[in-house]
Length: 446
View 1 (tube, rainbow, N blue to C red):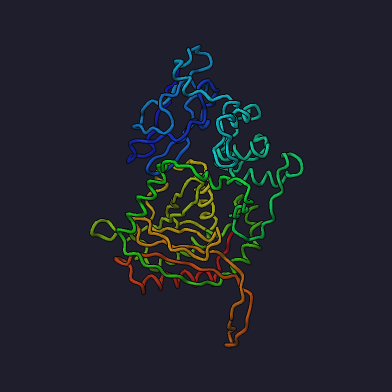
View 2 (view 1 turned 60 degrees about the vertical axis):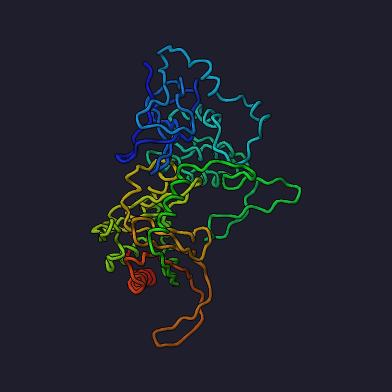
């Protein structure tokens, strides 16, 4: 019998959601738990899985519309039901446009748009075991002519992540994957961001970062929420910032030495983020005034340290929270940070996983910034910004007081704090503890 597809309730405080995109169209086959459509709420963006296997018979709520939770947005018909197709006018408005007409209307810009339904249809025959992947992964697979069934998935439930497919492409660039234009060399540990080449005068502008020059598009729900939250924060808190320079040579060498062993032992890549998370936990234990939030006219000094870790997405920014970070080992922090980041990019976060943070860490340095002046994530009272790590000559003093010049790995940490609650002396002493912990790192990683 037909199965109703409903707008899910993504949390107790969420009462409506906006359908941003249907990943299937009427008449297409769907598998139970396969991503069916994407929604945006005031908490998270998420992919919603199909509640049953069969054929998508009808789309009742088109993309761009906002409806209350539990509203029926579509209907799936079982293969044996023999149900009639959707009314002609609905099918005509929702059915995919033939490829030839799409090309005549407007050639799709490379790498800017989400994959068309054909991208998923191509993956189906080779996916007999229902390969789990995000639209971004499927888009990369289509562009690079990769059979997703051959890509090992390391994400939750065997899901293929962006890192999985990029690693597969790099490993099989000579054979299993259709060759693409050779990528320019990237110097390690340079940031992952690479500026687009400057086009010749006669070359038309190409889309960059999901934006097509000349377009006028409405703000997404996430973009609106970010705007509202940031403006509210600037109006609410008395923002003050401080910047500290650190010598992280010891950590850089330790990570380089341990990253292969760490990945073999844990199945997780070793990044710099858990080092900063551990240092923040250390500083917050000593200065709990920084691990606080404002509740009306009261200050709540939290007993648990819930670290928000900002994650940059192709379509915005989200801050999932590592709960009870003070109880986690270094490996536990790395695993939690990796898991939350992957599920944020795959739109698999739950609303409660982006709530309850008591202190936030953001990392503009991954894109090459020396440091940032981040806005406080309300109702918290402080946020730490992680700058890029660079090698440079510095003056070092040995234990006998002799000075010399050495090449060291240096970086900047910044803190934004609410001067209503935290004075400059407290913020500086907190950051001094973080700096001392990182520069004198003596914890075992495994």
